[in-house]
Image (cartoon, rainbow, N blue to C red):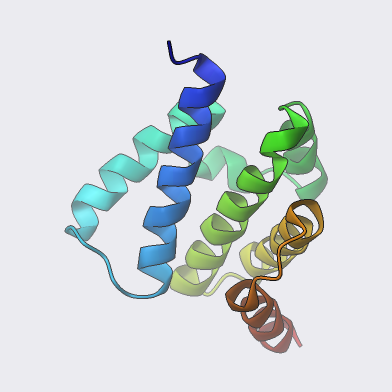
Length: 130
């Protein structure tokens, strides 16, 4: 039997993978379909949409993640990094890029994984924010 926590974790990974494909400019479906899925996934994961999430400070978002099970933190941080990175690039929003950098750094710390694409994105964000 699948639990709510397992279902949410599956949604987080699904959203993260969809964002990764968008970041790499390899979307599989029309962007309109992605937007629809994106909004429903956000509401399933956080109980609110991206607009409400993006209005929160980094510290507030980190507190939301800390309320979840510790073993899932890395998945949340990766998804949040991808989420803010993609929207920061599309909307040319430096606040979103700064949040992406923070969440990517937290992902690297919590996962213990050496992820070169993430490290490269952090470097790119740092240059963009200068």
